[in-house]
Length: 195
Image 1 (cartoon, rainbow, N blue to C red):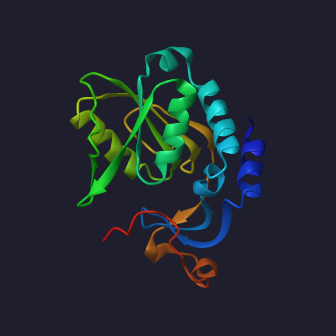
Image 2 (spheres, one colour):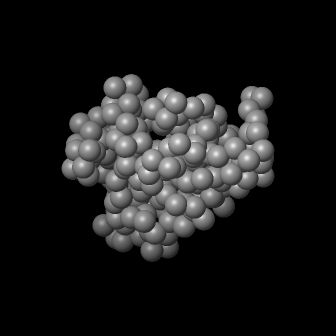
């Protein structure tokens, strides 16, 4: 799938939103990609993940034995990536502001992990998830996402593979353009604002 085809899937699913959004990072943006709107359709979720897996290097695909995603946004896409890769999927959850493994999830020491996200903007959640994985004994072989909103600038400490890369402007609270500030802001993400 090329970039246009992927964006068409998002647009046709009502997942490419325009307005004034407060991202989970606390930054403000005029566009928001609500991956859950796409991932609610198992056929589309499969198509996107099959395309992303096809873009991964063969050596990496052979190495990965576990996919781990941060809850909430990464749970469905992590599961679907694991299904396409033929391995297990688990997820991390926030407890007292930090990602942890719960529900009896464990990572055998040295396990080669793909950290999977739906959307990467600043990379904060991804880095926090990676820290949880390494603390638990896993080795993050790479990270992947459906959409890299940083257009390749987010540094996760590992290679990030993305189905598409976009440059979407995001602004700190004190740098919001007047045209965006005139629109009421909504918080569509799954995580509360950082203080």
